[in-house]
Image (cartoon, rainbow, N blue to C red; front, side):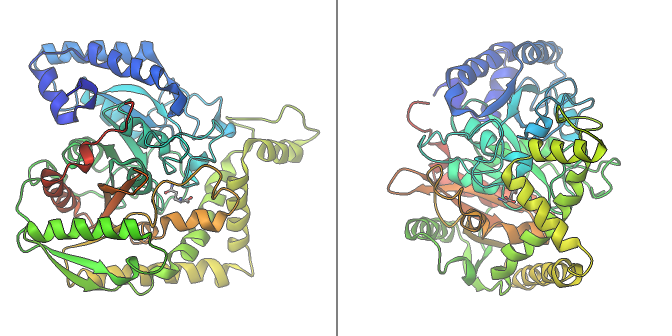
Length: 485
Ligand code: GLN
């Protein structure tokens, strides 16, 4: 097998045995990024910096003080602040922004001795499901260049799928790790809210945003989460709870596992081919000793309207800081302060971001607050309670990650609601703060990947990873690589 198709676990062994150096490995991926730049997966690649980090990692490996991710090159979503490096969040507003500090996720990878290959392309301010809202242009899906890779972490998904990086980070506010993982045929994990620090991760909707790994396997996701997870005093919503070694329980048997199947996830709107692949995956789980039980999430139909009040409300507040005064884009011409604000924001933000700011501001305004924002908060509580009742009857919940497979560029960008429906099965998980995963589970007749979603109890990441890993031991969907890569 080619080196660049290796999992993190495989690369770690090679580095440890000194069969390859981090500098050589980093060079391999940098060359691949350049050779496949047509995918547009990266916004920024800094070869010199990457190779310097690799050199430092080699010294550490040589001294025998390496840990599992030391010397491993990784791609980071361009939503994480990286000191001295461009951090754009996919927006014109931050197209010139060099972060003065590292996000906690980035410092943790630095401490582990990983190498930063580059910053991946994404939907503007993580708003989107197709990567088409990026100021830097869309990312192509390596399985089919006419199609989107999913979003908003589309650059990370395409980079891992095309083996331009062995693993990457993403963030998930309503599905942005899981949906692109599904559409690009890789493994993605959104941890429980509070598991991974949001410090230095550019805010979209603070009560929903969560960072997580995007990888070639569940085992690799466990290795990444081991580094990413943990309490951070600089994020007041990060939870002070011990971090288990997520690799330790990967192999636990699944005999007796109760898988809940929410009837709402298998009805109208689900593409037949996706439904069949999920059924086949469930059959596989039954062979592994699990049993399936029917559960219901009666309010899941309200998740999208609820989210599209709350997320824009939070975004309208978070994005108020981009005023052209302190950092980022500033309109070149203006008559007074108000015009500085309005021109900067008119020119710096794209259409989807403006739509959300307007919806959010409206929902929060006096007179509408009770009818929209408060109502949505109440719904959020009900959606969360649905999961709590379902988990009385099962250990994990499974279903499709997305109702369909990768769609063609332009096919949904003119219709926001059609685009929003891509996340119909993922959004309620964010509203409830639960962990969710997507694992490759087949292909449609056009050879486009299908993702199986696994949802867990609060802080039950170890169980999700175990359940995903056992599936990957008996299937090879996650090992497939698109033609030409
Ligand atoms: N697609 C959803 C949105 O546009 C979710 C985005 C995300 O998870 N960052 O808001």
